[in-house]
Amino acid sequence: MAGIRVEHDGAPLHGTVRLDGGRRAFAHSLACAALCDRGRLTEVPDHVDARALRAALALVFSHVRYDRAVRELTFSGPVRRDRVIVSAGLAERSRNLFCLLPALLVRAAEVVVEGAPQGCWIGARPADRHLAMLARFGVRTRFAGTTTVLSWPRRVPARVVFERPTVAGTVLALAAAAATPGRSTVLGASVEPSCGEQLACLRAMGARVEGDPPGVEIAGAGGYARVGWAIAPDRAHAVTYLTAGLLTRGEVTVTGSGPLRIPRFVEFLRDVGARVTERSHSLTAGFPAAGALRPARVRAGAEPGFSGDWVAFASLLLAMRSRGGSTVGGDVPVRRFDYVGNLAPLGLDGVRLRTAERYGRAVALADIRPNSRAALRGGDLGGCADSRGSAALLLAALTAEGPCVLRDDFPLRRGYTDLPRGLTGLGVKWIGDAP
Image (cartoon, rainbow, N blue to C red; front, side, top):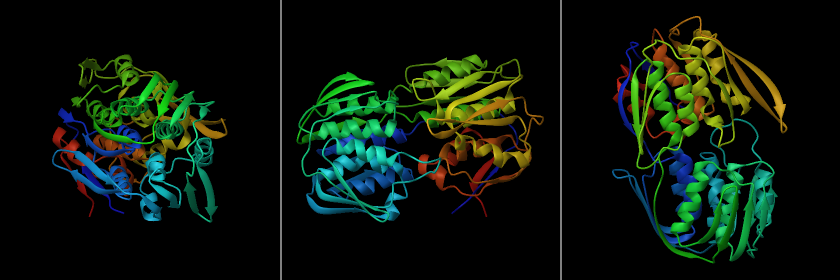
């Protein structure tokens, strides 16, 4: 476990950041791309999560190569194995390993997962529901302690209906349908853009796909020859850098290889009075000349609404830089707001949380008023298991009057290739390894 030290003099951040390919866009596109005998993916990120997926890919391909200089991943030489073992060390690095189960199962008689795929911990995830859904396609599962053993002796077309949108469930269902000869239907699918990216990748592979989420019909195949695909820009990274600019009363531009697809966050920025310039592949947000942001009411949850991934950034921004009362929340796990408790000793007093239970889990609503301090105190930021919460802690340090230290950088490295370097490029005084 390593830490990050941040020192900033309060100066506004300015500049342009070129975004990595998206963490989810990569994982979800790879879920289908890995069904091909060979592939070439560009704009591939290089954080812990992406490295775990590349390591899993190497379990069933003889050639897997990643060129960091140009962010290109190539793979070829599929290998049929009696057994593939996803070690506990690999499983604990990424929850997105679930996405590759269909691709692993079509090339192995058995897939052994030594522990549940993890990464960040923000509450119980419905792994049992995902496995039950795969069973509809013919996947068999047995358990031995903490080890899960899966096999796919016969692929069966299925009709899957989700009562509530689930991103991971959608990705698995689409990949399983693509790998299963015959027509399968997925209804109630998540409309998150990364799921749309997955389907677009599947179409590029030559698959027959009718419709788009939430209702999709796929004519699956026993195999696919090849695919070339560019990973869409990371939307959470875009939100992170834009928030950093506004927290420091500056102006930041984010640009990517394709459309950014964050319309609800753009609406939020305009609602609070930020100066916004939107182009096809870039977005600029500047602090308003009025000297403060306007309050807002943000209802967050599943997309196409305001994503729960962004609530830490929105609530921090409203607490530190707005005038008037705001609320942020809805169908959002309580742990998305973990960063608030870490910052209270440093002077964050503008965020109060209310909790409730919805669909069997604890959700939160943040009541926000302007913080009593325009700048936080320097000090210990602690750590946060959620990668977005960790990023919010790092951004909060940009408003502090003294040095701050983030104690555990693993969640940050899991979802960001190099956030400290990106912030340095925008003008942060000093950010690097903590002593």
